[in-house]
Length: 565
Image (cartoon, rainbow, N blue to C red; front, side, top):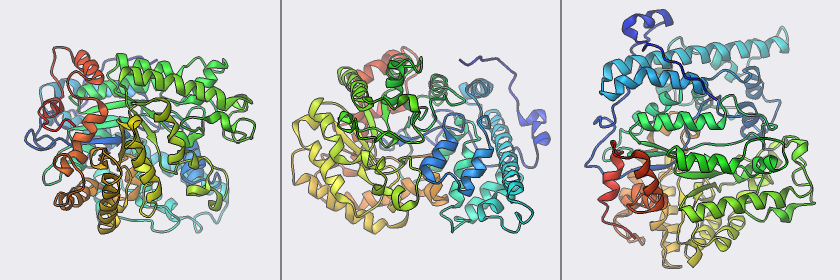
């Protein structure tokens, strides 16, 4: 567990900027007090990002995730570079808590100048460490390749070698060159994503708020951050450098310092729960969830089926050898693993249903671990990614009618695959599906094919309104998948703006919305799904958590909603 110590606040005024390098006090990071007009507008319509991630490299199985999931090839150049970083390259929970203490006094009285200086120092420090670590990793990889290594350097190696000295220069370069690396499936977004893993989580939160507070009519009132647990699926049972319990503590503190603008979902991994039952670990995934929600202000649960489990009915895979994979620990490959995981999932669903706790399930056939070539690892060719298909989610509301589930990514993250979305929509129209929802996270067509995405949304919304009483207009929610979306390059900064333009045009059509469609998509539907209205169980817990102290600004917007259906 973390051991927090106090230090005096470090500011650029004290001269640290000169010590750490060029322009340490001038690059574009500006922290805010909770009501700062740059990121807050009490008169703007409620806006909730239902699907984000706030993490760094100490929270993730970084090497496992890139090697088994993102790149699906353990010998790739990027994977080799990441392997060189080891485990301890990012700020731990203790370091983050110490940093948060340094800015707490400034943010409490809205001393923007002092807190800005502190955050600028933090961001430059972590950027410098990241740059140095990546460049050292590249040198090590090239040394092993031999004398001709430099001439054979890949584009990503050259991009890392040429990183500028200051974070300000890097941000300027990022804005000017949207795709530095157009080949090898590696873009400037990959570099940006990797560098974020060196950063403080709090810096990433405010970077997000800056990027998505530039639209014409909306500000982000609430971002819902989802923690993940890959310890057993791709981490060989080893905890991340910052344990999940410490991640909960850090995110709780960030939520408090952000004025309740950040709320979190705790991760549940049935593999870990099985490992706990087998005596392989002392950690219970279910107990982590319960503690986070009942004691630390968390509001929901994150499920990640492509890591190796069906939402239910895993017992059907027992005896097939399905889990005999290199990345799954041998001790966990028991003959009844599927049956055991079903028991763990049923216990979770029962608790969530009884306590009004929402669940977000990754439902896109993506991010499943694999160890083969692209023809067997990409999309629906990957058998682990297939675990997310709509047909596999059907038993959950059927066995637990009234359960709250958000189908993250709404089945797919690209156009042309509406069969899954139609099935999810059909589930919503059943009596058991009264609290089933979906989100728009990582729908990159908003960045590249706006007209086509608009036509698709019209089609699926009309389909839904014609097949039952629960129109999708009342169930679809805005989501980004930040920080993952930064892998798309700087155009990801326009995600909110692009969706605003699309829904401004959809507001002119009759697509089944109870009220204004854009208001439902950007905020109302999420408030309903999350149970944020007065006297709902989640809201009751939050009211008790905040007590008689200041309440998050989004509460007044939720309480004034005229639409309650």
